Image (cartoon, rainbow, N blue to C red; front, side):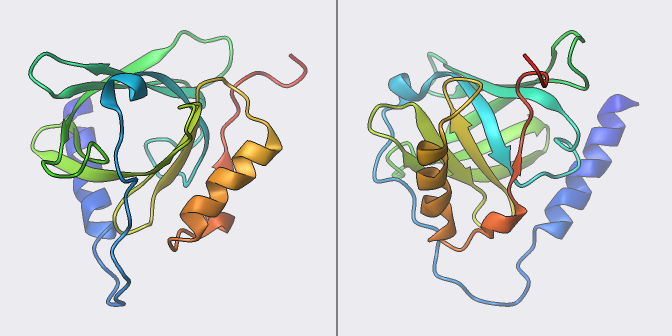
Length: 178
């Protein structure tokens, strides 16, 4: 039943993500991504929420490079603080010729979506990912919190490419008062 719900939801997501008739220049990806260095845990500092991520806390993506070149892509979250982690397992495939900056991500067969790594900080402590239609975006950090200067710099990278920064929402990573 859960898989059927995900299948229906992904179908709706893909339908909603179709172009709205206005042409924009293509999203510009990072020139290259050092995939081994990119692997590991990335906390979702902010995102443009959609129904799968809405209301979740302590969210993070965990990436592991596989021997076949694909990437294990786990989305880890809690519905509320104090609960056990939940995990959705996916697999990403790097788009050939993209310098590691474009990925096809699949959590439920046969549905996939493309993600574009728009920017990675030189120290690989901050990153931004965006869908090609610019409707979904994520600001990632290696720690659960991020200083305001780094956050604003990352947001400016995706806003310059047409992501509506006003739609970004911070993701609670630690309970208030902690």
